[in-house]
Image 1: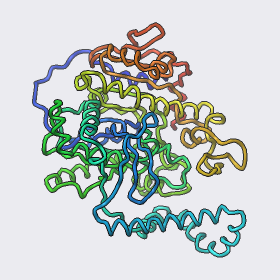
Image 2: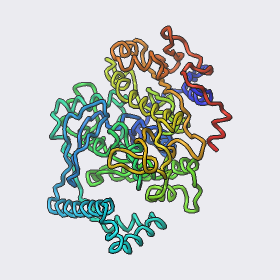
Image 3: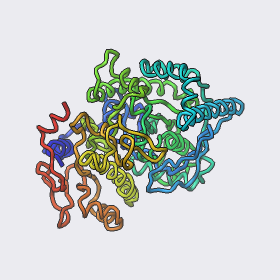
Length: 531
C-alpha cells in the first residue's frame, strides 16, 4: 500500500501508547442511529453526520442481509436487489392501498415509457430520422437547448409535469416467514454489533445515484444491491425490524428492541448527498419531533459533505455553492464528472465504529461495523469476509485495472462512447466493446485520481475465528494466499496488528511498505495528481 495511505490508516487504528482512565458514566441514549452502506462514499457523510449532532452511525452492506428481487409498483421488470454472489430468496412487491390513485399513476407512467420508447425507435431507425427531424425537430431542438443551458430548470419542469407517486408499501412481512424474518434480523443486528442501546429512531439508509445520460450509471449505484438502488432492501428491512412478532422472537434470542424504537427506511443520493425518508407516512406522531431533528441534522451533514466532495471535482467552485453544484451535476446530461464514485478505495475495515470515529479517511475505506462480543459463534464475521469483503475486492480490482491499463481494461473517454444496445460501449464508430470504467471515473486529463493498490483489510476479531474462516472458504483463502488483499487482524483495540504473510501470521509494522506486488505511489506524485 502506498506509504501515505497505509501510514495514515495505521496511525488512526493503532492502540494508544498509554491507557487513559476516565470516570465511569452511564452512556446516554443517542438521538438516533443511522446505518449506512459500507460504500466508501458513506465514510465522509457519516463523519459529518456524527459531527452535526447526537447520531451514532454504523456500516453494513447495503442490501441489509435481505437477498430479494423487487417488483416495482409501476410494472417495471423485476430486478435482483442483492450481491451477485447470492440468489434472491423471495420477490418483494411494491403496492398501495390507494387503488385508484396507483392505477392512474401506473397508466400515466406506462404512457410516458411508451412515448420515450417510440421516440428512441424513430431516432435509431435507418429511414425515419429524416422525416422525424423535419416534423419534430423544432420541438425537440428547443427542448434539447433548454436541457443543455438550464439542466436544473429542465428537470424541475419535467418532474412537475409527471404525476406524483401515491404512498406505497412493500410486502416483506408477508413473503418472508416468521423464521426467515427472525433469521435475517438477528444476522444483521449481530453482524453490525447493534444488539443493545437502541435509539428512538434507527435509520436504515440505502443509496443510489441520480445522473443523466450516463451509460455507466450502474457503477455509481449500490454494489451490494447488484448495481441497483438500495431503496427496496431498506424498506423491506425496516418492515422486518418493526414487525412485532419478529421482535418477540428476537427477545428470546437475547436481542431486546425497545417498544419505542422505530426503524425508518431512507435513501441517500450519492451525487447530491440528499437523504430522503422513504415512507414518511409510516412515522407515528410519537416520533415526529425526533424525525424532524434527524432530518435537520441530515441536511447539515449534506451541506458539509457536499462542500468537501465538490472541491475535488473538476469545474467546481460555482457561485451557487456546493449543494447547488451537486444538483446541477445530477441533472446535466453533458456532465462527465457527476461524482467520483468509489475512486481512491483502498481499505476494508471491520470493527467497532470507535476505532475510526472522528477520523478523516478521505473516502478511501469501506467501513463495516462489527462487534466480536455480539457474534459469539462467528457466523456474522464469516458472512462479512465471504460476501461484502469479496465484493469490495472486486470493486478495488476494477478501479485498479481501469487505472493501470486504461486502454486494455478501461472503457476510454466518455465523449467518444457509442452505446451498443444494452450490451456495452464502443470508442468511436468501431472496434471491440470496451471493458471496465471510463477514464472520467478514475482520472482527469492525463493524471489519474485513483491510486491502484490492492485492498488492505483490517479486522478486529479473535485470530482463531479468522483462521477458521480462511480454512473453510476457498474464495477468502485464494485472495489472502495469492496476495490479492493484505489481511491484518488484531484481537482487541490495544493489541498489535497481525498480518498474514508468506509464512503465516506475523506482527506487522504498519509504517513499512507491505509486499502487495504493486509499486507504491509516492506522496509527491499523489499530491500532484490531486491538484
